[in-house]
Length: 169
Image 1 (tube, rainbow, N blue to C red):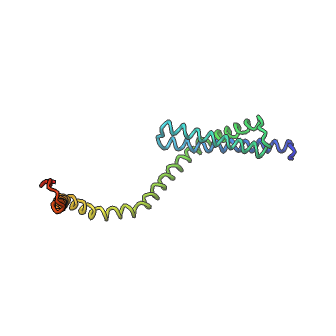
Image 2: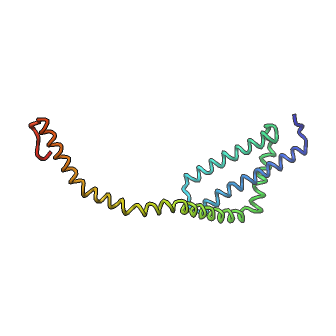
Image 3: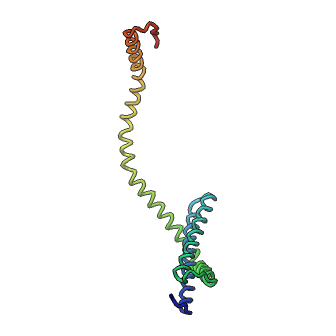
């Protein structure tokens, strides 16, 4: 069993502060996305719920791993202090950087999708004309094929001895 000393308590407080700063950084990523792109309220609510679940899990892991499962009041104070220090020192400047990184990331992702779909677009453009010709001819020829099938049916029914054969069947 680990002995709880003042040094361990200080380390736990500092790790709590780092955890609070990390949680605020993650939330700033969400904020940057919201500033860069108009997001519906439902999506914002879902993101906030995901963030809260991640924060709760992070707090649980911190308390379980660092302090033998005991949750201390100064841990909450350390997290709040870490988040506040981050916001005061880097918050708005880093949020603008996150916005630019988000726009860059989306641009790169769209470019990669265009590159990956280019062969399929080329294939579709090459196949489009022959397929449209086949479809046009099949529509034109379908009437003749249906007439041929009706006449075959009439002949088959006559040979079988069915007397009620209609001419327009």
